[in-house]
Image 1 (spheres, rainbow, N blue to C red):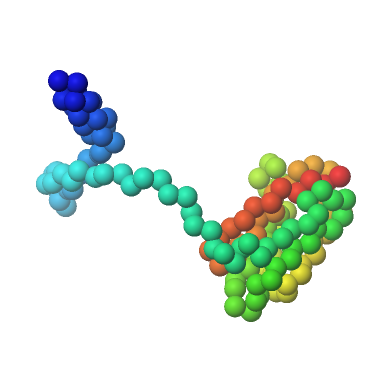
Image 2: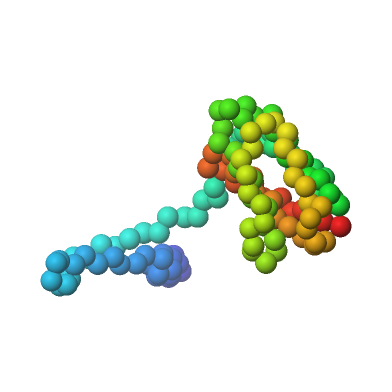
Length: 129
């Protein structure tokens, strides 16, 4: 009896995760229904090449250096500096294995530096003193 209750309860919980997707014809009439099972969440896969990426120092008063051991001619690499308010302050392509960003013209605060390598993105928090 207990096993039957557990199976029934699990079926109800599992059924709550499904949803319907309807199909319509050109006139707007519903002609079909598909039961859709949502896919479990999977964290994005990290490219092993991003392990060779360093940003230093993360607490600075002037220059931040992006260093990589990746062959920059093979990879498409970009950086974007964003304020905490979400404003894009600086963007550019990374064309060498060492790129220096000057933070001297920005106010003290917290900034986000995103580095995109092909389709993989790494984000670093930069504190400007």
